[in-house]
Structures are given as C-alpha cells and as structure tokens.
Image (cartoon, rainbow, N blue to C red; front, side, top):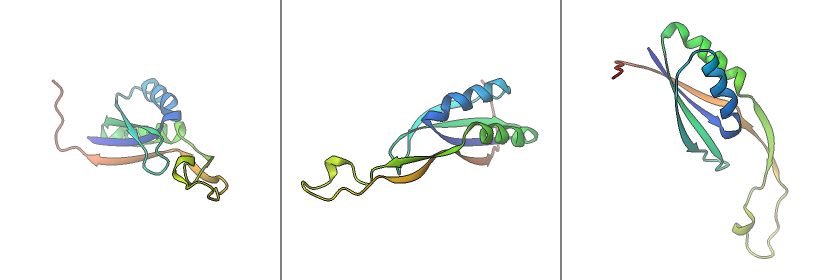
Length: 109
C-alpha cells in the first residue's frame, strides 16, 4: 500500500476532489498554507494499493495545472513610506506536489 500526500492550490481543490471521488478514491483533506505566496492550499492524504498508484497520479496531474499569476514582491504595508514599489512579478501557481510513501501497516477501525 502507498500513501500519496498531495499539496494542491485552493483554486484546484474542487476539481481534484471531484475527480478523485469520481474515480473511486477516498482521501482526507487538510487545510494548509503555502510558504512563498502565503496563499491557501489543501493537503490530501490518499491511501492506494500499489496497482492503483499510476491511476491516482494521473487523476492528480489531469486535475491540477500550473498557471501564471502576477504578485507584488512586497506587500504595501511592508514598504517604507515613499519607497519605490517594484512592478508585480509573474510567477507560476497551481499544479500539485505529490509525495508517495510506503505504508508499513494499515488498519481501519
């Protein structure tokens, strides 16, 4: 058995959870926050048998695509008064990060 820990942007959470359920995968959803942009994420814990691993990773990849977003380098309240405010910077957001971990033992009570 494998545990797939998947971190997904908030905007993608509905699409991926619906796709997982539609394909028969059960999961636990945990709210989390990203470090770089400090935006909301969702962490999904998905337990799968080894023969289903490629299928669940395919569902994740199909549901979560990266996209470009403009962000300000400094929030307005962090810059000193009268300081030069740089133009917004284009960054990639979205997509998913998946960690696959071996499960030594699994019990359902």
